[in-house]
Image (cartoon, rainbow, N blue to C red; front, side, top):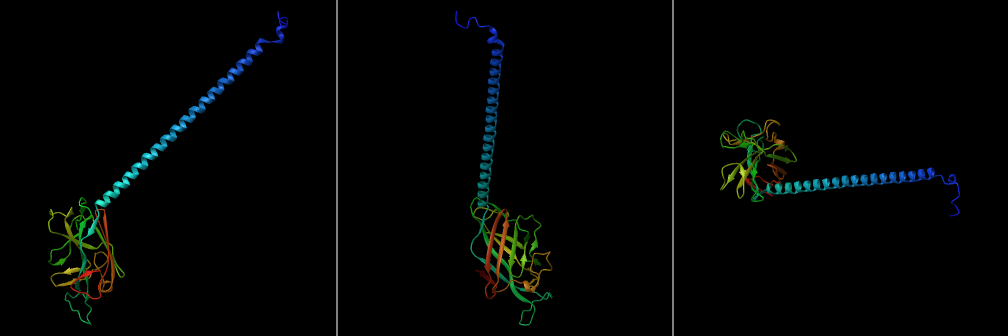
Length: 256
């Protein structure tokens, strides 16, 4: 027998060794659970982050697609001027007596009464709704309210006057399908009316106040050597025009 065979058991208590083993085992179990919890937490966080990243990427891609499509739609609905911008002269009945008298001492004056230009679509596939707020029939006074719901707005500005909702009419030139939709190769002549025409008396009237779309006073008349800007918004398409009136007023003028 060995040297320790006769040593009493009280020097090596079995119960104490068992408790130590159990404690160590318990600690190993707790450590394993904590590790598992940490790993699970890491996986959950990583999954949430990946989902958030994927969602953000999809949202950004969708917004980019909308931007591109919006740009294409805008390009397809663009309008452009074909040819020049012309103006017509009118004798304005400033004193309001329904008779036109223009001399060096009279109050009546010549001024630019209308501005005209021809529109086409920038792309053959783009259709523009040019339903006008006014029409003209060369009788009584022109223009007349069309009674139609127009998606277009014309803004006219000079150094003397600003008209935020100017009167405008449209007539199609050449082949067209009879509606107010500018399509493909169609051409539409737009007339912006700065004064109201009195067809009966062969003159042009001033507006009455800000409730109408016309120039209201002699000091605001669009006359010689005057710059103007015109913005037409129609069916989502925007057209800006800037020109200057000539040094003398002829019956019909090409504006530069």
